[in-house]
Image 1 (cartoon, rainbow, N blue to C red):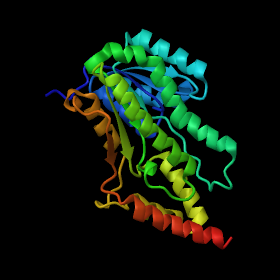
Image 2 (image 1 turned 30 degrees about the horizontal axis):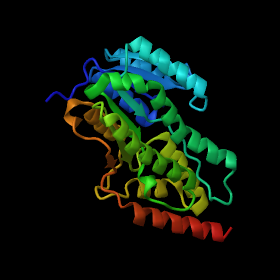
Image 3 (image 1 turned 120 degrees about the vertical axis):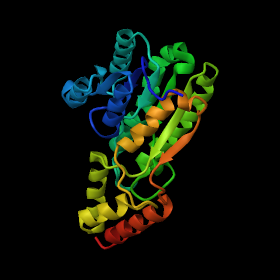
Image 4 (image 1 turned 45 degrees about the horizontal axis):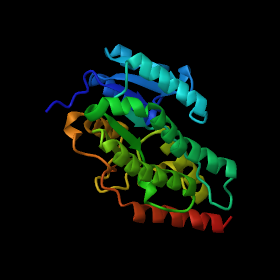
Length: 278
C-alpha cells in the first residue's frame, strides 16, 4: 500500500514553525501540493523555501485566523489555485496559561478564537472541496494531551482542545458519508517554541530552574524521550495516506507513553506551592 501523497492537495494552518512547519514539509516531500498558512508572508518564507529547495510544491496561504473574512478569502484562493483540496490540517494554536481568577477575558476569548473557532471556520470554508475529494479526503486536527490532563493554569487551553476533539467527532460523522476521514492527533510535550515558552512560565511560577524543569517535564514519558515535531508529522502523513483509509473519528496520542495525570499533578503541586508562598 502506497503511503505517499502524490497529487494530493493540502492546506496546513500555522505552518511557519514547529509542528505545522514539519507537517507541511513532510507532506510536500511525500508528493502533496501544500498551501502553507501563516498570518504574514515573513512567517512562512522559511517553510516555503525549504519545500522549494527539496523539490516540493507549495503556495502561500495568508490570513489572520481571528478574521472570518480573511479565512474565507484565503480558503477560496487556495481551493482555486490548487484546483480543490484533499487534506486539511488544522494545526494553528496558541496557549495562554493562567489561573482562572487571574485570566483576562480577552485572553480566554483569544485562545478559543484561534484554537477552536478558527478550525471551524476554515473547515466550513473548504467543506465543499472536501466533499468533492471523497475517499481521498482527510481532515486532521492537532489537539493535545492537555485536553484530558486537566490542571491549574491550563483552563483556556484545555477547554479549547476538548472542544476541538468534540468537534472532530461530529465532523467525522458528517463527512463520513462522503468517504472523508476526520481525526485528531494529540501530542504530548513536543519541542517547539510554545513548549519552551510554557515551561519558562511554569519555571518562574514554581521558582525552579528552567532547564531542570524543562528536561524533567519534556522527558516525563515511558521512553524518557524528547519528542520532536517530526513525530507528529509522521502520524499526519500516515492518516492522510491510503494506509489510514479506515481510521476516522479517532484521537491518536503521540507522547512517548506519557502519564499525563501524575506528571501534570506534580507540576501543578509545585506551582500551587509557589503561588501559596508568594
